[in-house]
Amino acid sequence: MLASFIAFITSCLITVLVVRYKYKHESLTSDFDFDGPQKFHTVAVPRVGGLGVFVGVLVSALARLTQDFDSGLILLEVVFCGFTAYMVGTLEDLTKKVSPKVRIIGCFISALTAYLILGTQVKSIDILWIEPIFSIPIIVALLSCFMIVGLTNAYNIIDGFNGLVCMVAIITLSAIAYVAFRNNDSAIVFVGVALIGGIFGFFVWNYPRGLIFLGDGGAYFIGFSIGVISILLTVRNPNVSPWFAFLINIYPIFETLFSIWRKKFIKKMSPSMPDGVHLHMLIYGRIAKWVNPKSKNSYFSSNARTSPFLWFLSSLAVFPAVIFWNNTLFLQIAGLVFCLSYVYLYRSIVKFKIQWLIKV
Image 1 (cartoon, helix red, strand yellow):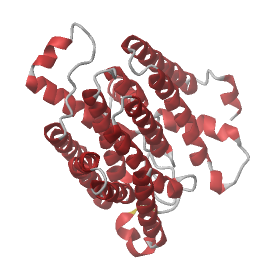
Image 2: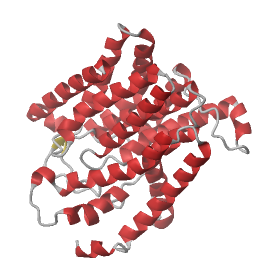
Image 3: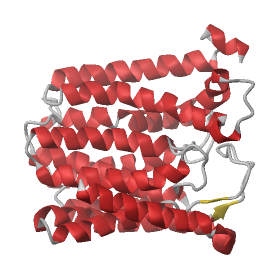
C-alpha cells in the first residue's frame, strides 16, 4: 500500500498546484472551447491533469526500486514505454493542433516499445480456429500493438465527464490487482495499486467539480498502462483466461467499436470526427438530469451525476470477470451479453423507449 500512497500524495499535490496557479498558465493549458459537440464545461479548465498521474506513478516506481527492484522496474518500464503516448496527447492538450494520425502513431510507438521491452504478447485468445495465426511472430506483434493502441484511444473516447475515466480505470485496475493476488503475482499487484494511487490523486480534484481535466495525455497514459498490464497478467499467469482481460475492458472497447460503426455506416462520417451522441452523452442529456431535474446545485451538476451510471455499467462486466477469471466460456458469454445489453440500452435511450425519460 505504500506504493499507492506515494503515488496518491504526489499526484494529489501536483494536481492541486496546477489548479491553484492556473491563472499563470491557463492561456496555454486551459480549454476555452465551450461550443464543441463533446464540450460540457462553461469555464476555462486546465487540461493537463495527466501530469499528476504520470509523475505520481513515476515517483512510486522509483521509490519501489529501493524495496523490490523487480516490481519497481516493471512499473518504471510501463512509465517509460507510455511516455510517447502521454507526450503526444499532452502536445494536443497544449496546442490543439496534433492530428489524430500523429497521435495514433505516437500510441503505436509506445505499444511497440512495450512489446519489445515488457513482452506484451497476446499469445492466444482461446478460439480454436484462430489459434494458428499466433504462431506467426509478425501477426502476434501487430495484433498485440493494435490491442494496446485500441484501448489507449478507447479511454480517451470515454473521457467526457467528471470522474468517468478515473473511476472506470480504478475499478478495472482493482480487478487486475485482485486476480494477480490470487495468482501470487506480487509485481502486477504492485503496478495495479500504484496506478490506482496516481489516478485517485487526480480524481479528488476532478470529481465532482471538474476543477481540472485529465486531457488527452492523461487518458492515453491510463489507457495504455491498463492495456499493458492486462496483457502482462495473462502472459505471466497462464491460468488467467485472455478473455478476462477483454471483459474487464469491454466498456471502453465496445464504446469505441460501436462509435466507429455508428459514425461510418449510420451517419456516413469519418470515425475520427467528434459527435455528440456517445452513450455517456445520451445519459447526460436524457437520464442524469432526471435524477434531480430542478436542482441548480453546481457542486453536483448533471455532469457529475452522469459518471456513476457509467461506473455501474462498467462494473456489470468487471465483477463477473473477477469471479470467473479462469473460465473462458463464461467470460465469452458474459462479453456477448454485455455487448447486446449495451446496444439495447443505447437504442432505448435514443428512441425514448424507457418511459420515464419522456418526463425529463
